[in-house]
Length: 196
Image 1 (cartoon, one colour):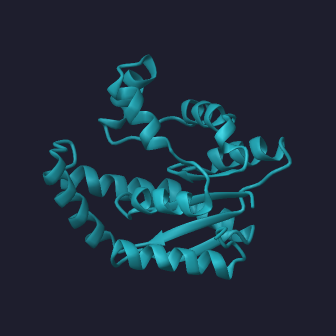
Image 2: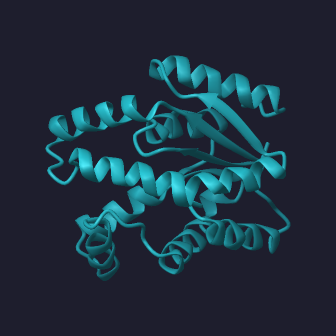
């Protein structure tokens, strides 16, 4: 079964944690723009330097740069039978780009999973993670700014996918296992069940 999925939620909602298990369940690659960006930053590439300067200010990487990366990644062989996107698309412009890119191959995004979370609980979780991982740039001010950017720029894409009848809302609060089960239940109700 070919499935093209997107997981969306505020920063710290647990998208990355859920994406790995979900992609494994459906045997598709989990494609995280964050991972792609971090790898480039770590390796000191030209792209990495550009991305680092932007993200250190708490801003989103421009669509043109992100679209280019995603087009390249979705063109790789392991994504031919589907994928799970995490962190892309984030804006209406990126939705348009992805829609056209997939349509050019006779495909579309099958399902969008929204992890619904409580902002204060997420901020607390991210501050704890910042301490544990030594992320000095993750101050409460920066974290709250990212939440605001998410509400302002990313949340509107959910309306686009809801209008396309592709949105599955899942309560993102609880243990990793509880949320994972809710995601699978939500997908099953929408007609998407992983191969046994």
